[in-house]
Length: 85
Image 1 (cartoon, rainbow, N blue to C red):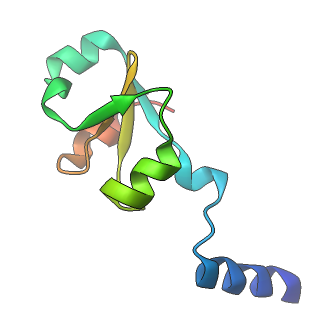
Image 2 (cartoon, rainbow, N blue to C red):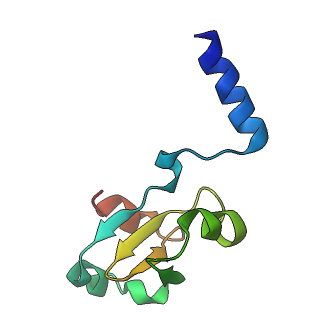
């Protein structure tokens, strides 16, 4: 128990991210067209999610993958929550 608490404290101080922090949700292309997802900032699926969050979007950004691109839908969280894992 003590080691878990210590790890969490070190993780927070060093700003280490876990795999769950980098998770994106998925929308089908049809769902993306319905919500006009192309209006949101995006990057190619081969890009670094960790890097884009750290440098541009912020670590709490809500990211959705639709087709070959990953979109930052933080301004409309309902899109993120209607998407599947």
